[in-house]
Length: 82
Image 1: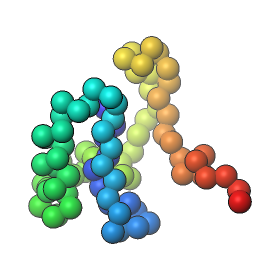
Image 2: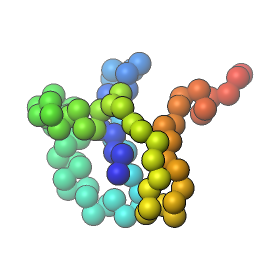
Image 3: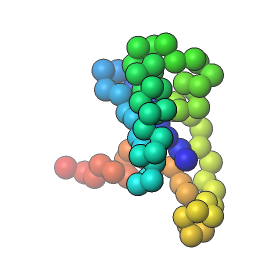
Image 4: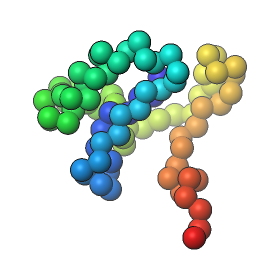
């Protein structure tokens, strides 16, 4: 799972907390605690770095996703020209 729990790099007052997939609801008690700690800046830096918005990702094949290649989603892929 490539969850993100971090402030947006361009908008420091906006926090991103992703839930991964539909079955991630079972992790809400743990994730909720991490989100609160991240917002309060009390999350251990070693844990915070694992959920960082800017951490490095590598494209890979995830067997849980029927062999589809997992790639980094880029902001410019989401926002087209006006």
